[in-house]
Length: 185
Image (tube, rainbow, N blue to C red; front, side, top):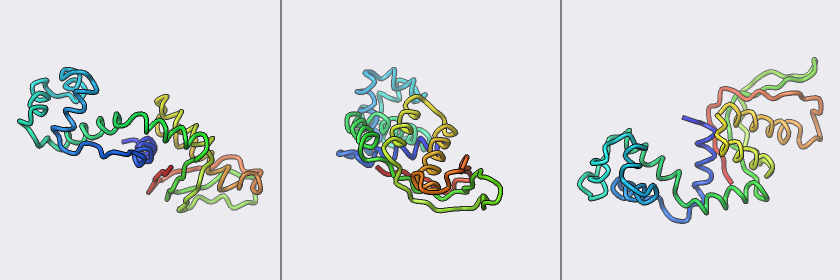
């Protein structure tokens, strides 16, 4: 499970204008339409082509929990691509992104300052440039570690340094032991 990647996806999914198909047969029909065939869907979900066909014809209605989760994830990944793209573009150009997190944070700073790690709950509006960097890194397949680095850099700039008005000598922000992480556009 990718904490940062899933968080970014969830934020974008809040902008959907139509509900995602709920029932397993409806989800399966949507995937077949998107991937243009039952064979491609079967390979992607790691099930038989015959099983896919039976879902499409409403002969099976209730998938196993692991299959249900895979189907829902794949449908959400493909649902309303234009609206998803618009939401990302708006966040990256004008809207920015809000990060709400409860995690252990500390920083590297010159001797004499209190750089002790401690659990903090922050809700911070990040400027569009950081939203753009997060979405860009995610689209290029960056892992959670890279997304976490970008978020830590953003928190350093916006929260700890207040856009350059304080803590100018701050070198690096540590962002670990994440208990809660949520993004909003």
